[in-house]
Amino acid sequence: MVNSQGYARFRIEAPQAQSVVVSLGLGGTKGGTPLTKAKDGSWMGTTAGPMDEGFHYYHVTIDGGVFNDPGACNFYGSTRWESGIEIPAHDQDFYALKDVPHGNVQQILFPSKSTNSIRRAFVYTPPSYDKDVNQRYPVLYLQHGWGEDETAWFNQGHANLIMDNLIAEGKIKPFIIVTTYGMTNEIKFGGLRNFDIKPFQTVLTEELIPYVDTHFRTKADQAHRAMAGLSMGGMETHMITLNKPEVFSYYALLSGGLYKPEEIKDKSKVKLIFISCGSKERPDGVKNAVAALKEAGFNAVSYISEGTAHEFLTWRRSLHELAPLLFTK
Figure 1 (cartoon, rainbow, N blue to C red):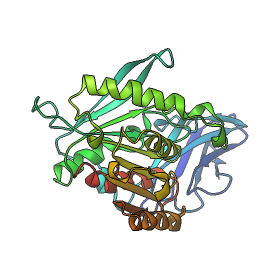
Figure 2: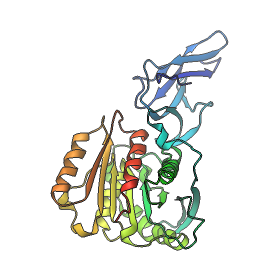
Figure 3: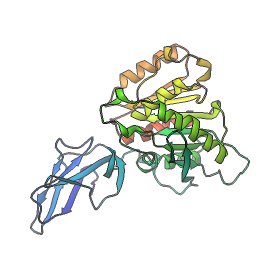
Figure 4: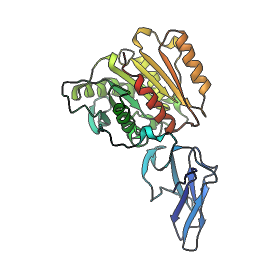
């Protein structure tokens, strides 16, 4: 349960247990929230303080064993399925489920010769997609972070609802969103130096994009293609957009690094560079990087999510700010 002030209360039935602790992510107390055993054998406890607004992963530790909360939904994060809690945000209206026309999120399975496998992706098509069979759409390839997978942007991030609401308000031109697994979890946390972008780059640019362009009504050219990613997905976006400037024209890093003007060889191929983070991360670095890009003649935009850190409310807000800037030229 979450109260109006953002405190979270948990109740777990484990009558034979000796210790029950709820471990919360960013916004929680250090060491998690210990629960106290009641006479009926249940365990209950409340966070020591209010949680930060937005979505947070958590799990329950019972006598040293790690379990998911049976009373909550599960989300793939930290390379495992974790429980999730939503602390209502004051600006949650932009990702709320509303009575507006809704797009479709569908799973696709595409062949990958480079990995000798059938891989999965999810594709969001806007509400108008099935109404006008002659209309073609730009595409945003949107990457998750370390520990997550292709389900994250729609389950944790509510990307489809953000799009639906923006389209209904007339604030964006409709476009398609594609998410796929970025091969991020084969390395241990902290081992980014050992990450090789080439296998995923091949899957994305030589296998997935051609499949999407063949099976969906896309505007299949560089001018109508964007790539964005959060955290490690931003690192991937940075690498791939620099390696393959002929593929994407819109770049976005969400808590996922920076671009330097000297890294981009052909300025004419880049229509937008969007860089964002939470105010509890490194906002000065984002602002300074965008200032340098602007001075070098790039169309660059910075966005700082107030009061958030490395978490999904930062990235939901970032997508909400990014979407109206895409495919405007």
